[in-house]
Image (cartoon, rainbow, N blue to C red; front, side, top):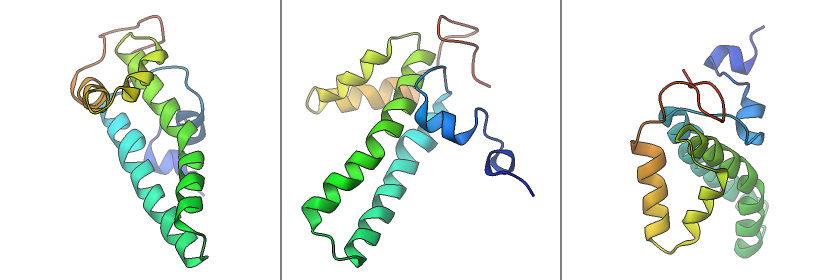
Length: 123
């Protein structure tokens, strides 16, 4: 029986990708696991909590709490691929411009070629 990581050809394993902020990831991985996965999981969790009749404000807090660390870990790895400190994730705290800058830098600009201080170039 194939494991999920083997079936999806995920390297590193999915749990490490979502929970460990060390290392580097490519742009495509960031789009998939840093934006699309949290968005989809957020919608699913909101729907399930709505079915369970959890109040909307409580539901919002629970979903944000569940998705906070995986989203941060994936974003930190993308900043590492750009050879920047993981603290750059805090740029999203700057209203409007911060989110836009994070999406452009992480989603559109290539990482540093070859190894850098955060690890080998992602494949």
